[in-house]
Image (tube, rainbow, N blue to C red; front, side, top):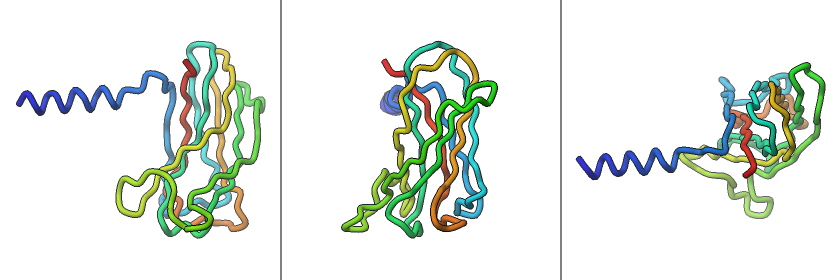
Length: 152
């Protein structure tokens, strides 16, 4: 019984992430990200300071390309655009075709990519992600998400 409690306690301590103020992922029901599926998130910054903004992608081996292009938009509480940019990241190694990212279950891979570091004032913010590839529907993309963390 003691060993079980120790394992649970260690697991909880590892799982705690005091720097994270927001993290959420949106699943794509058809295991594909359509070009018109804008993924939107709303988060609250309680304390002014420096924060990292990152985005998450969960994909399978069915993803047909080595990299992904994503449009990122950050808005304040009045929906004034603070940042918009196109980012490109590799999901597979260009030469070997080996998947990058962390694999937890079979052919599913999780990736986390930096978007920006910025000073946020206290308040509400909105992030939008939209795939920007040469095809209308990206097969093999299971989810996209956002993470915001305080820089210590």
